[in-house]
Image 1 (cartoon, one colour):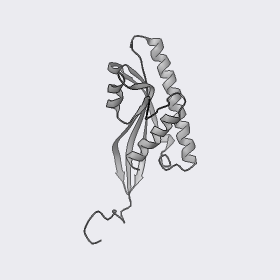
Image 2 (image 1 turned 60 degrees about the vertical axis):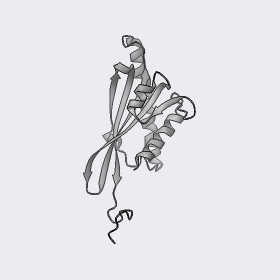
Image 3 (image 1 turned 120 degrees about the vertical axis):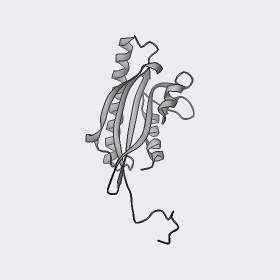
Image 4 (image 1 turned 45 degrees about the vertical axis):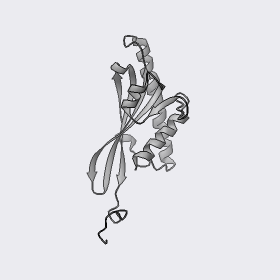
Length: 161
């Protein structure tokens, strides 16, 4: 699965979610770079937001490469000592994360290629604190397996085979 397809899918979900409402031509609520999300918050980023990180490949087994993916569901709090607000952010971003998981599983049942090989049993979620940027929320971790066909190398090698 190409990283671009993964980015397009989760950007689409961010556009459709009633609390996120990412709009590429307007308010920015989605980023595919964590650094961008942290640095844009003062100027352009709106909250709550979704940040996608298509990280490393976790392993190679037979003809499968497993890409690690994390989705961050974040909101901004100006005062890290405002514990009521921070708790409300954790509650709200947890609900958005659960909405995304439910949608992913629904799309998987419908055969959506991006999520078709994601195993819900292998998902992990953790609360995150990016205090220096004033961002709090949840991170959802999962793996997207990609099958490699060794019979056809897309004819990129000029070896006559």
